[in-house]
Length: 497
Image (cartoon, rainbow, N blue to C red):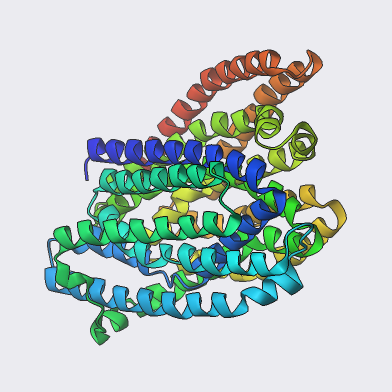
């Protein structure tokens, strides 16, 4: 894949994520104000539960499909057809099992786990059942999306995602504005997921052949991808535990509205992470293709370019979320809640920036066929980081939950990153850390000074806007020089190698 195709894929992914974020915020305001904080919290809990199950039972199949479609689409069409059929069988079977389990266990979650303040447990149970069954449809849908990512048709996948979500949010707003209840709202959300799967299936069938939609077991496909899949399953399962543990623990220790507030804050900040992830995921097919062709010099050129782009451009987005915390959440919720979220959002933004800097090395490890690095990292984090998460939440509440996300990524810096640099990039980890440390120092100085100056001037929208723009100008000017210096140093290392 040439650089123009990579640029186009990155642009499609970023644009798609921006539109999705805007639509989601509009819907959240309607849900919170019309249905109340309990309904909003239960919706967040249902989506969190679905996200955990999706991560735990993804089985790494989507990543395998992207990798194999990108690297072998022209070489072995019969194998790819068998791969798609086998993946379809696994995903649909897992969907049916998980949807049934969610429906059966929903009363337990409503009565014994979450802390309702005004909603009755029967309504909460119905909401969790309907929303769980709908959200889990993302699992088979991810297969079809992975196929288009592997084929470099990311623009098409984003059009489907944005269009179906626009229909979801428009219908949701209409239901809430028409005084529909919380069960009706989540029923529409579930129906919109079903619609997106149907649209994906039709487009997928036209591109790959409708026979590829038919679930079928091929033993050779399973044996060929067993090792990679086992590592990816470990990564997705344990990674999702780390990502969602803060919300699960909060849902038990605090009232469900607090989960809703924190859940939205986490979602908004994570949207910046999804933008960075969209850029990294757009590069994975190209990385896999170049690795398959043994084009290591071209691989390193693309790696430097995409990693530098993310490390440089992710910071202004996360900083904007920090600057807008009080105005944004005052609009969606109220000023009291906005003040409670000020420190958690700053910590979440820090953690997600660290996450963004690790995305491209992670994608490189997948392209190189070494998912076991991240798999072992997440296994160790379960023992080391998760207990710290519980303690931080118990001691500091929402701020402790956000702090746990920073702790996890510092652990990833200490364990996984050195291995990826040594085994996949053949690049000194100390050089990598020096480059990121320079960006972190610049971010702290530029945006820290801008934020405190805006707060000293009153903290209203005008000072915040001026402070952010001034800090961004300083950051972008100095950061460009840091980025140019890092790229020059990387080219010298490549010539020496």
